[in-house]
Image: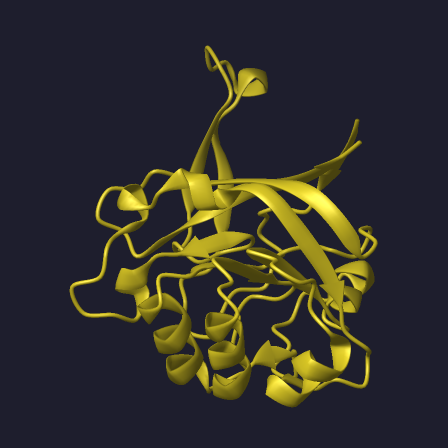
Length: 211
């Protein structure tokens, strides 16, 4: 069986959404300084790196990440690659690409994946995201989970319409995937967000398996 780690490594150098708390990982107790054990301190927002959005992120009274059903986050998934020429994932782009019939879980591999290969430490505002027409197209096709290879499912500064459409339809959103080493095709997805009580999202470890 092949295992593909599609999670970003959370580190002090990982870009975060503009205005979100910076990532701080600091060793506060050190064996070499006489401590009994090495201990690290973590500071970060709930939407760093590879993470899952809960409905509460954009919906008033929405459910929280600790209430999310895990069956949607585990199961067969299709990795769909879009041409580098696609700047916005709208309905036309999805119709032209063609989605697998009956797919319930879809991860979109776009030109965003090159950012992770290049090790871009600065936040990239020109990333590819799904607009409202693309969101409604996915909802109408019965997709239950969608993921993308940058830090938001929606284009920069156009977050609300996409998130409201997807989360309002009960769809699970995974953001910040690293699909740079994954080929298009069918896999099994395992994605488990941290169980943060009352939070609207959480970092996750996500893997794909095949064979």
